[in-house]
Image 1 (cartoon, rainbow, N blue to C red):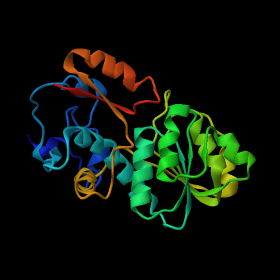
Image 2 (spheres, rainbow, N blue to C red; image 1 turned 90 degrees about the vertical axis):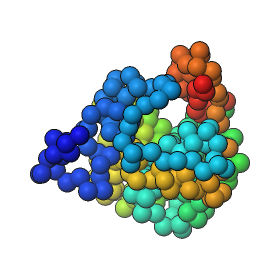
Image 3 (cartoon, one colour; image 1 turned 135 degrees about the horizontal axis):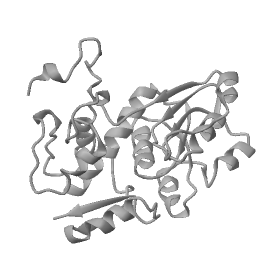
Image 4 (cartoon, rainbow, N blue to C red; image 1 turned 90 degrees about the horizontal axis):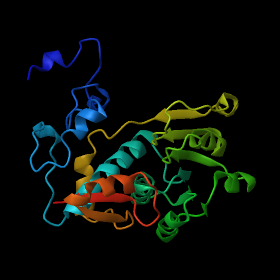
Length: 255
């Protein structure tokens, strides 16, 4: 492949290849339709740089979960967090729980979580998050403010909730992807509080670190509950992934 056809001279790409609109295939980004055409196959062809071998003590299930862990690592890295800061996580799905695990591994001791699905509230509590609220309104009514808010819910109302939970001069990191992606919010909240808002996309050179953290025991992925499916039930796995069940955060299809 001629890389000169992929990169434009006027576009910065060093260290930010996860932002490039490259052909759709594993490791290259592109359209979701193009990626799905290559899913659930016994063999795929992809660039060598996108392969991250799993050590013997990392299971295939854990390997599948290093993807959301890599996304969380990228978000926490961009946030430039101080371990003494008060943090709020919106959403306790796979990305939210992985973000919580990374924060704990980084020594952050004060993390609150907002999760409306009752079945997803237990793991943040077990991991030490406090308080764990069913809605942002619960925290707002209690006068709660955070130095840093991670929006990991992907709900179209979560962005404004994150702005309201951030203290004056605070920061908001948007990790979730809402549907639809066009959302409305009160801009005066961010302006009057002079909030710094940062959007993240995918992961950037964090998968190897994610694998290493799991392999050496810095992160225990057991809180990211998984339900496995045989290949014949792949459609059911896809359906479960979008249903937000409380008993499982990720579906994994096994051959």
